[in-house]
Length: 496
Image: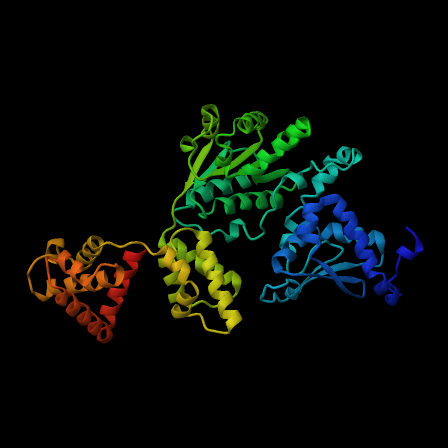
């Protein structure tokens, strides 16, 4: 190292003038280690801001990027910068959302410092628990770098993990408790408990979250174990690339030497015989060596069309855990957890409204809450059911379930403990007439049927009878709070 590259803290002016030069050298070195794609995603958006008494301050555009950089690259950044300048004591990461062009972002308060101990004050748990996935690349792929730096290491194979997807942030309910328990067991076990663990369920129900949580947990508790997580699509593309470049031996060594192999959306390789053949042999090799395999798909192994029978058999030989569609209680719990994570106050009635109306999947539910909170913060408006309906009008319309008059009659009859036949009868007793009016009112509110059509479904009544029922129910609703609550409950049940 030359004298010009070594800048001491006593000469602060010289340090400041050389700051950009040092950053250019540090980022160039790390870029050569982690590859172009990772550099563009995580390092290129960063910028050096200032120095203060041995601390280098680096600006990042989002809190998420700050957490990720601290978890994966902070220690290495400090080490490389120390080589350039021995006066560096720590690196401090500051969130500056203004660097995100064209995207309004809520500022994330606070700073995170990575010092000689390699961990930040606010993000100590992340920095301490997660080993950089670049580390095994430097250890295992020295030969690759000697042969021209071909990117065939873990950093080039594995997909990035979302630091928000941990077990602590997974909301457990009846639909997912078995899958959660199975994933937790795999993550905590020192020996393979069942092989493979196969998670399946519909879109946005938590399969990927659980897989990321397993990987984070192993990184934290058993840092010596190597883990690869990626999609089945990327596995296939890597295999095709290895065939094209005649490097299948490297490909096999990469995937068959890991301790834990995690492949998401394995249904993607259905119908792709060559990829299935390679995956089959990789699967067998890892199982024979006692290595853990975790897979996910949208269907159970036996229902995967286009999958070889022998592969279906292998996929079914471990533990198959399904994740069911969410319940209202689970959706409400997820919304409460997310609101707490955001640090915002969302009225209980708004959360209940969203839990009733957004029933398709968890990802859509969280996206809805994000939109509502962002709208409130950017527009300076309170979060109410009215503003929620306004912001989410397109999403709510797409999630509206087509309710039939038969369903309404059945639900109302059950609620008021009368017979369904009473909905069509000529009886005028109040105990029967009032539930019938409620059912007519809900039919008008929740279906697109005309008044004459509704009347015909209620024993051939005239449309004026339906109009009278609607007016009567609206009148009682304004005068009787208990009746209004009953009506709202019925509406939510029918729409949920």
